[in-house]
Each structure stands twice: as C-alpha cells, then as structure tokens.
Image (cartoon, rainbow, N blue to C red; front, side, top):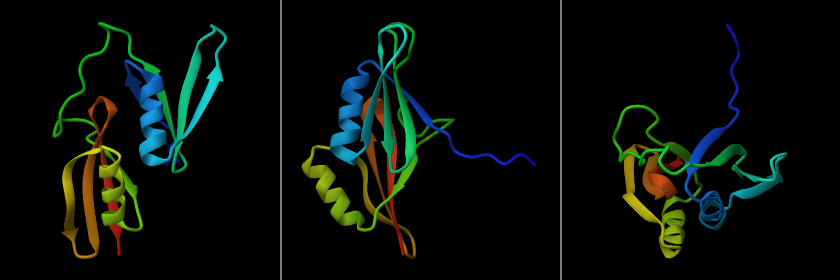
Amino acid sequence: MTKFNWEHIHLRSPDPEATAVWYQDKLGAEVIRSNQADGSTRIDLNLAGQKIFIAKAQPGKAGEAPSSPYFGLDHFGLTVPDIKAAVTELKAKGVHFTMDVTVNRPGVQIAFLTAPENVSIELIQRG
C-alpha cells in the first residue's frame, strides 16, 4: 500500500494577511511570505510543524464558512501541555471558545476555539 504523509492544510480567506497575523499572534505560527511570478505575495504558515497555505478568496466565488457540526472536515487539533493555561492565555487575547475545557475521557481534556473564517480548532491535553 502507498505510504501517505501530511503535506499541508489549505485555507481560504478574504484577507490572508489578517488571517496569518491571527495565527501568528494567537497560536505562535511562523508566517512565511514569498513573492510570486505574477507580483503577488503568497502567505503560508508553519504551525507546530504543519504547513498551512492561505489563499485569497475571490469575492463572489467562495461561500460562507459553515458552522460546526457539518459533513466533511470538521476541525483540526493541537496538543498542549497545560490546557487550562492555554485557554486562559488565548481568552486574554480575545479568542472565542465554543467549548471550554472538558474531560473527554480519563486522561484527556479538550477545548474548542474558533479561528478566522469559522475554522474550528481543538486543543487537547493528554495524560
């Protein structure tokens, strides 16, 4: 069987620069800007080792982001060593949470936050 490896997550945004700054400010992502042949600037992120590409959504060509739950990709998750501290820090930065810290099962705590364009992100503390 073919071996698959993660390559990237691709986001669409009406304002890629503002979206990149949000991920940088709130989650510590590294913003990577590169000049393209057409004179535009491509904006990518490195978030905990994962590549995230942010493309500009063209007006009238992209629909509104759905609200969870819905079919398809629902969210992505990030692990943290101290979920209560992470949630407190993010709330102080104005991040909206759709679920506060909850024990999912013994030894696993989770919380959900909302990023730009209604992207749902799960924070997980294991052990």
